[in-house]
Structure formats: C-alpha cells, structure tokens
Length: 509
Image 1 (cartoon, rainbow, N blue to C red):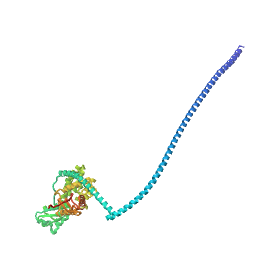
Image 2: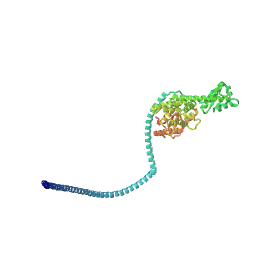
Image 3: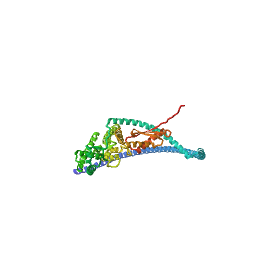
Image 4: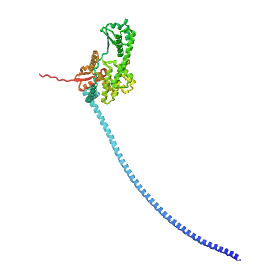
C-alpha cells in the first residue's frame, strides 16, 4: 500500500514536474521568440532607414552627374558655336582673298600681255639696231661676239697669268730657300773626291815582242782569249800596250786580269788561256762580292739580300760618263739619308733606295729597258719593299706618279752626278746637247737669240720686246721648260731664263 502510494506520488510528481517544466519552457521560449521578433523588427527598421539613406544619396549623386553633364554639354555647345563663328569668318576671309587673287591674276595676265608686246617691240628695235650696227661696223654679230669673248679671255688670261706669276715667285722663293738649306747641309756633310776614271782597259806589255805571242800562230791565242772572255783584244801600233774593248765591264775586267797573269806566266797557249780566264773569273766574282759587302757596310745597311750585294759589286766595273756607278750609289745613299733626316722621312728607307737606285745598270747589258725599270723589277723581287722599289723606278721621273722618297732619290742623284768633274762626256756629244738645247728655244716665235751656258745647265733667251710682253715672257718660259722636259735627255736640271729688254734711244742735236 505504501509502495503503491509512493509510486503514484512519484508519478504524479513527475507529471506535475513535467507540466511545470513545459510551462517554464513555453514561457522561456516565448520570451526568446518575442526578443527575436523585436530584434528582427529593429533590423528591418534599420534596413529600411539605410535603404532610404542610400536611395537619397543615389538620387543626389545622380542629380550631380546630370547637372555636371548638362554643364559640359552647354560648354561644348558654346565652344562649337565659337568654332562655327571662326570657320564662318575664315570662309568669309578666304572668299575675300580669292576675289582679290582673281583680280590680281587678271591684272597679271593683262601686264604679261603688255610685257610681251613691249618685249616684241624691243626685240624688233634690237634687231634693227644690230643690223644698223653691223652696217656701220662692217662686221656681223657673231664676229662681234668672238671679238668680245677674245678680249675678255685676254684680260682674264692676263690677270690669271699675273696672279700665277706672283704666286710662283712667292712659292719659288720659299721652296728655293728651304731646298738650298737642305741641299747645302747635305753637301757639306758628304764631301767626296771627284771621280773621273777611264772606261777603257789598257794592259801594259813588257815589250812589243809580247804582242806576237798574244796573237799566236795564225791568231789562235787571241781568238781563244776573245772567245773565253767575250771581249775584243785590240793590238795596234801603240807601243808596249794592248787595249781591251768590251761592252760588258765585268768581262773586260776578267780579260784584263787574265791577260796580266798570262804575261807574268809567259806560257801563252789556248789551254793556259782558258785556265787563266777561269781563275780571273773567280777572282772578279770574289772581288765583286767583297766590294758589294763593303758598300753595304759603308752605308750601314746590314741584312741586304746576297743577290743584291753581288749586283752592287758588279757596279764597281760600271761607269756612267766616267763616274763609277758603285761610288755614285754610295754617295747617293749618304745624300738621301741626310735629306730624309732634314725632311722627317725614314732615313733607313732613303739610304736603301739611294744605294739600290742604279742597281739596274748591273744587268742593263743583258736586259732590255731603262735601268730604272730594270732596277724596280730587281728590288721588287729581292728586297720585298714596295717603297724602295717605287723610289728606284721614280728617280728619273719616268713614272706617272712621284713619292716623297722618289723626290729625295732624284735630288740626291742629281747632286752626285751634277758636281763639277763628277762626270764627263765626249766633246761631240757635249756640243750636240748644247745645240739641241738652243734649237728648242729658237723654235718658239718671238725668240731673237738663245745662249746655252754653264755646260748646258742654263739657257738664256733674248726675246723681241715688240712681240713678247712681260706676261708673254712668263708663258714662254713655261712652254720652253715643258718642251725641254719632253724632248731632251740631260743630267740634273736646266735653268731657263727669258730676258725681255726695251731700249729707248734719242739723239741730242
């Protein structure tokens, strides 16, 4: 009974507790729902407020944009209206200018017509005047033009000649002073003996009986000697002497040495002649090599090719107008080096070119052509120096161009060969050269007399003062110099002096 009551009481208590809990839960939930509804309503109210604010702001912004756009549109319209006004004004100005230009054009056309009419009238008057002048003067207009042109040409030519003369005098004075200074220094530093050696080899004999032994039975000895040496043995009435004549100086030297050895030995027959000629040939070749080395050593040019040294040695037996070519080459080398030093040119190249400038004369008996061209080919083959080879080719002015080194070698060559007594030539050739020089001068019109003086190194020409004026004398000098250079061959240089003299003579009575 008690248990059941307890259970019932517990159940009733639980039911009541559940009802109370449910009631409490409802109250709590209701409160929460109401609070939530209040928050929602507050949020809705806030959202509506913000929406209204944003809508208001958007409307205000839109209004501002609209106002700004309308303002810009008004400004653009005003600007367009101003542009329209400017364009309209420009169009009006252009129309006015077009009208003005049309009026001017019409005026120009009218003036052109008037000008053409006046020009036609002037041409007619000009033709009438020309015809009248031709009738009065007796010459045509073409002839008058030619006379006028000739007068102008003469006047201009005279002015040009006078100016050229002044410039030439000025440049010549400066060039002569500098050249005299350089050349005088070079000549003072290079003092050499006067060279005047014979080009004929004469061998003395102990007696005239030796002539018969040299000739031999039926002339076999002399033929053997001439065949072995390539020279001519001249045995004439000259007492106790035999002359050796040969085109090649080396062969002539070989024949001289061989002949002297045969005379000393006394055994003269063909076999002995061939032996002595071979011995003499070896001696001459050794001597040529020694002379070439001595020349190279004297000039101070070590390292020269052996072939060139040998050819230099051959020049020991070569003569030009009585001047030994090897000594001449050594002298030209020294002079070239001195002149190059004064001008600031490479001294070593100048010395080498000066030493080799006549190397072509060593073989000019065997090779055809001028020795300068032959020397150019030899130097180009063995020396491998284009500057030296060109200077060798240029030293006689036979090329189209001229380098500074070529001028130096040419000047040194003229200095060496032009010294008094350095060279000699036959009287007949000397007179022919003087006569040819005077004939060149006399071939020009206006020349009265000409005189070749100073061994043909200067010619003085007297002209007729009536036919040749001062400017004409200047032109005549140039023409004579040019013709001398083109037609004559001469060592060094020739001075041409044209003299024009005017005399006035009266007699007192």
